[in-house]
Image (cartoon, rainbow, N blue to C red):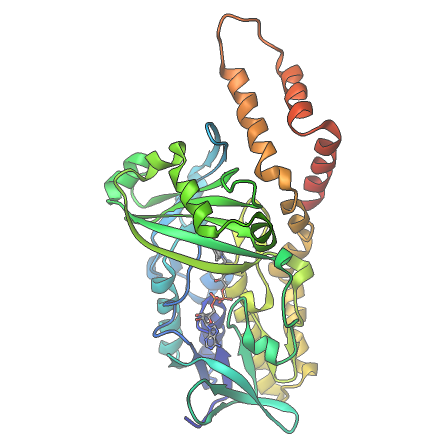
Length: 432
Ligand SMILES: Cc1cc2nc3c(=O)[nH]c(=O)nc-3n(C[C@H](O)[C@H](O)[C@H](O)COP(=O)(O)OP(=O)(O)OC[C@H]3O[C@@H](n4cnc5c(N)ncnc54)[C@H](O)[C@@H]3O)c2cc1C
């Protein structure tokens, strides 16, 4: 197992494979180490791959080459209570032509493809290998060790791209031993098999158009929400809930998922679908406040390992941040080789690059979003308010109507309280 490389990447998710691909294309001898039998085997997400120009620079014909399911032409949000729902939706022709705004993908297929591109560029992919420790020589990181195997894989620089629980970043002392449960969410997902024509008819889609929908009010008061994404001939549905709120509720993620799937307004969307699999994964949702140290002597941290995930409540962005940070980490390693210096002094350029990029600008811009997502009323009282108001507006039964502003005021006072409403609006304003 003793092998020497010029760089090591731990984890063949979007961050790791983007980093390995960029370094390999620049001629570096890079090892991409993955614990799964193949890249993507253990990876799941909602999921929507959002458009990113950096990957289009790597692959100018990205949407033709990558294994994509459907491009997202329609996006919606549904407010739900036990017996009512109110839906808003956006659709535009701009999202229906290349370059598309986003795609549904399957992680086992997509992650594998991206890693294979890194291999085609010259990277060495080492599967079935869990990195368990860092090798330190003369006080510097000099490589990694693999669980259950003798020997070391050596390189003067390591990119930690091993996901949200990054063991590698922790070992390097770059992140806290534990994140607060307030900053972490867990997602559980069920995948349903459904013929393409049924999906097209049911969700009003043609060609390879796709639909993405978020649900508010479906998590029994636990902070979180539901999602539905159409793939080519399957539908992904699931929930994402904050771990601290889940713990306080005493409920389990699968109880919440099951009651979501059983809601009458939702069940009919899955009629005839065959349940194929369940999966679950943790999400770093603390935003800017959660970022660990991003570099040290001989090490850089990218993607979820660095908590580079942006959950604004409107979009959940992770893969695009992971891939872009992987590319920036790789460019910094390439610079370090030119300077023959892998110390913090050179590697700090990674943080500077991130600060200048949309990744950090977005995370900074939305740094108050996690605070908004902690308003418990969003998950119960507001969906009730929206659904009840719409019911009053649509109901015509031969009795005098209340004017709409008066109705809004009455409902807001009854369901939220005017002081709370003003406070929540202020928090939302700052967050968004
Ligand atoms: C339910 C859910 C829904 C989501 N929805 C979206 C969405 O719609 N859009 C979006 O952009 N993002 C979404 N995300 C977030 C997104 O999935 C992540 O931000 C993204 O996967 C991060 O990529 P990464 O490469 O940093 O980490 P990962 O994808 O987690 O990859 C890490 C890799 O490292 C490997 N690994 C871990 N430890 C070791 C080790 N010790 N040794 C070797 N290999 C190791 C893993 O097997 C894995 O392949 C969602 C996440 C969840 C859980």
